[in-house]
Length: 448
Image (tube, rainbow, N blue to C red; front, top):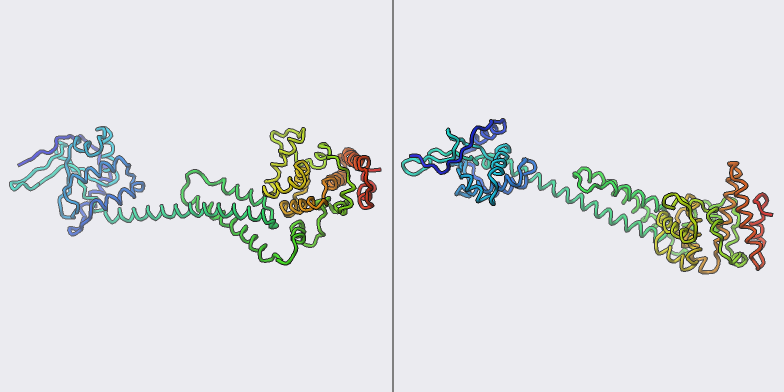
């Protein structure tokens, strides 16, 4: 007796080595092997990227498994189902016939099902006298049983990879958060380090993180961040261990200012000027002797030409508003914290604080901690012991010395220093101290 369940024709289909491999595996199923079809299906879903199966194909596989009445699949049982295309479409959420055929082919190629074609290419089952199925033609789901252990291993590998990916993402997040916090702490506390360079290194590493990337790429970036994290942490811990708790704040600030352990305390005016010119001009009496008028912008730019590097488009600085904008760019580039900058503006005034930033930026290679140095100058400004005049004069003298060494720009540098000197002489109505006068009247400085 022959019972036709479906009359869906298959037509001719090519045979592939993958299909043959699946058939061989199906024939080798141990008779006593039993699997839970939905557990195996869950493993297949998790390993679908490795198997090459699509979500649509798995929706069809889900439907095919539902046509087998038993949840437990046995190695010695009949594992062929023969639903019609209409029945499959109904259980696969109304999938179009062409799409259905395409994804059925995907399941075959992945070795998840085997086609059992009848002589006429139709799906049906032939039953015997007792109603038992003697022969069925359709889709053989025996690979679900034969490859159950393989699917489990693949699913475990995928889960392990997902976990490793999640962990490396967590490492990146934690490292990024901690490094940013430690940099801020180092800047705020005046820890001696080139925090501007540390920030640039951090940004360079973070900039390499792509939007989507394989785990090994993220692992390499995470390793770089962890190395940077260790360096920053070591600097902070060393500072904490070596910090003398009994030392007063001025002693700590002098330590921060020194770019070399054996160097003398760096004068405000010189920013590391070797000859120490103006070294005493920060004293209270000398500051009172300096002119009260504001420095001309032209003289400041002559003394601090590096500020022009910060102007977008390579243009010049035409007024104090543009100069203040350039100072706002220089401040974070040197690792100076917002709080230190705000404190300086309050103590010195916005324009004087910007000139101070410009002077520090001009000689940043000679200053170990720009933030600590600015805080030191801010404290002196609060005590009435600081003026930007000696800083600018020292920079102009250094510019003249450099011009004499190189043999270029000597005349212009001399004119700049002469102009600044005349302002000091003509506009200061108070008595100038001997130290300040010697600073301004050094031979060969372009001053009379």
